[in-house]
Image (tube, rainbow, N blue to C red; front, side, top):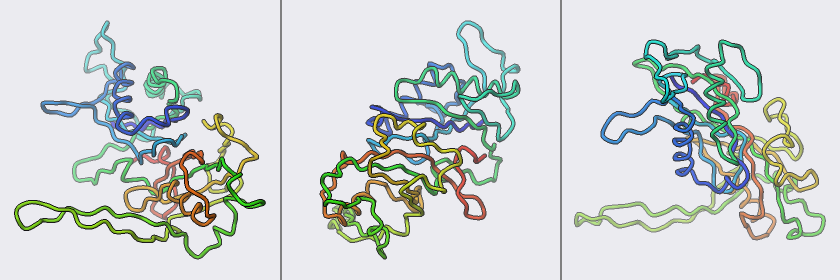
Length: 305
């Protein structure tokens, strides 16, 4: 069965890269005795996939990893569970949260989530788990990565002294522009040199309008955020400041259109005529979304596929 886990990544762990994160979860599931499905072949590895990876230095309360599990049983070296007694099927859409009580029927799923949370290190927190749709032969399989269409961020500017007196870094004069321009560098492509080898074409530089990829924004708590969102209760305690220059924004994210919050900050810095330094910002991802048939945004933790 396929299970989607939602987790938070915060504190110093924001500097752990995506490849290290994959290895980390492989170790967590082993320590937690999770019955994870493995690939077949000479070098088997766990079957898992992540949603849109975080850039280095960004914290989050909405990271997702999908695991293929053989069962919801916690394995034990002391007592082997017979195959016929293992919990190999579970109701599609079954959902549990780490900090909420669940019914006895959902207890096996909650136990797996709790075991992973207990084995997680500082800077990680398992938040929820959902059993996903079992793909049948002939159906188009979708991963968390392919489902992502948007993400919400909280962004804080830490260096107001660089601005002119009375200037707001996230002021409306920027948002009221007809376009938000950033300069992007496109790396050269490998092309044949005509002699059996390859060479790289020239690097091209172009101005790109990113405004269509900014779906919504607000200086205060926004209506587009998930219901019940309280930024002070998220994993932002190491930098959150009510009096700071900050904003909430929803950006296109995923394999079709993707705008990183750092690129948006580069555009604002260019408009404000200040040097862009990544260390001048604190960025926190609040949620990641797919889309329903009507085009509305749905949090990945609420999707069964």
